[in-house]
Image 1 (cartoon, helix red, strand yellow):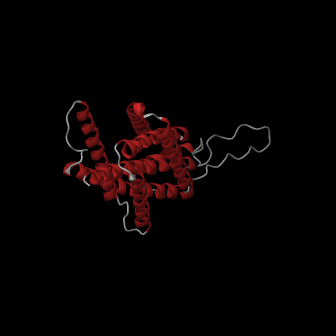
Image 2 (tube, rainbow, N blue to C red; image 1 turned 135 degrees about the vertical axis):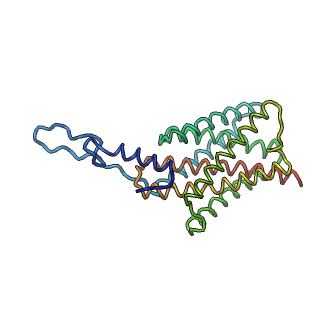
Image 3 (cartoon, rainbow, N blue to C red; image 1 turned 60 degrees about the vertical axis):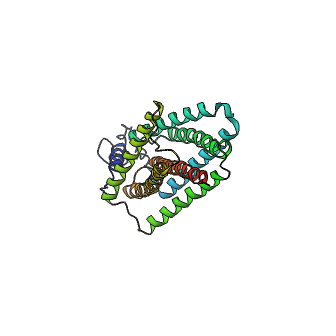
Length: 268
């Protein structure tokens, strides 16, 4: 079956190759061994992924993020918050890029990513709530994040928003553009240049709103990937990749909502 998503198309071809044996028949990874007259055992069938697989793995990854965030919040002292924050951010970014670009359906790697991102999210949340003094901001950001997620899920299920080829191209360009802007802004800040893009001002608030909109729309891509993956019969292990995509969008949306709420509270 064809799909307009290039990542899913690549996963589909990879899954088909891994499930195709020497005789070109799906499900036969190895030819039958030479027997002594007895019939060989049938090769194990590859179970296709399902929506339930993605849901279970997404919930498990979110639980890992929550637990590691709580541990980091309570264990890491304020004096080490900066170094641990930066280290977890860099390691999480590298792992995320490796998983994304290499399309690695590796549960151990994805679980490691969730734990490290949990540390990062926990320390960022602690900074806003305890150190910066924005009381209640973490709970507000969590409620808003999951509210947006469930709203996008309902809109997608009702077919109000669909992942058309044009929408997918737009989102790929938008995600790449926003990521490039954030990275360039970060590099400039390291050399002492302040663009105001992440400050509490009209430009900063506007950019945060743009990021929130794009992060929200990225759920449509994730839902489409799950739907297409199930339709294409990808092996169950690829549900880890789908869950990883949803997790990345949730974390990004949460951080952007947290930043925007800090801007709004700062104006009070």
